[in-house]
Image (cartoon, rainbow, N blue to C red; front, side, top):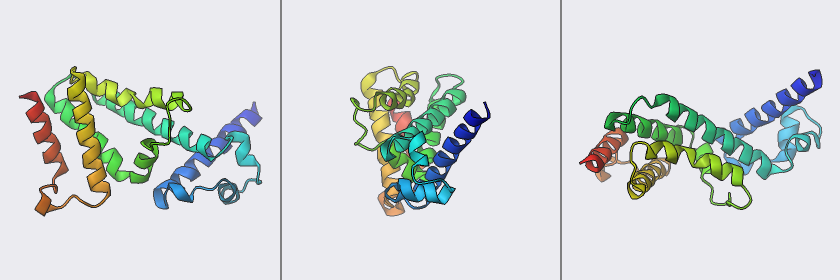
Length: 180
């Protein structure tokens, strides 16, 4: 029993350290060998918990989607316009406060055929949004809008002269237009 707890603690430490590397330096700085050394593990110890770097990264992406979905689910009290605006503000803030994790979650390399678990979990935020906007085209439009706004912010293009300096106002205005 104690070995299982130690293994879980080691696995959690690997994930926690990797998230720190991703947030402070970027995804490209995650290296299994350096990660093991940083945590104080032998060369092969990280591989006892994750078969390779992608396995580790997809685990973190899944955890990130689960956290996002759980928070979105807890936030929903009714399917009012105000609730949708609150959800999108949270979604936006998650993507802009943790841009490297956001990039990890939405990397194109996570193919559906290889990463079915990730894709199943990644659809949960969209399903939550669909409770507010039953029309598939409208919910996809809202998702495209919020991802575009996150990308603009993360790439430094949220500027007053472009009318993009108040993301909360943009979100509110966009949702108000959809509800008209």
